[in-house]
Image (cartoon, rainbow, N blue to C red; front, side, top):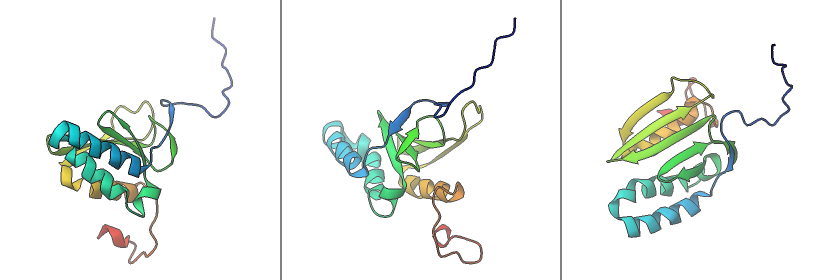
Length: 145
C-alpha cells in the first residue's frame, strides 16, 4: 500500500529550528568575559564581534553562537540549518561553512587566517546578495575592490 501524501502548510521548518539572533553588542560582552576567564583562545572571537558590532554591519548581519561557533544570517530570525554561514575559530584559523539548502551534501567550505574572517564574511554576503551597496561602478561593488 502506498502512503498518502499530506499537504504541508507554511511555515515549515525544513532545515533545523527557528532561532532569534543575539545583538552583536551582547556577543561582544560575552566574548570579553570569556577572554577574561578563558585566556587568549577567545581573542579572534572578540575581534570579529567588535568589527561586526559597528555600523552598517550590526544591522545587516545577525548571529547566534553555538559554544564557540558563530551561525550568521542576513535576517534576525532564521532557520539554523538553511542559508547560514557557520564560522569557527581554531588555532588561529577561521573555518567557514556556508549552508544554502537542506540535504545538500557538498557545501561551500573555506579556511582563512582568523584576522581575515570579517572581510571574508563581508565578501560572501556581497556574492550571495545578502545586502546590496549602492555606488556601483563598472558593474562592481565599490566595497569589493
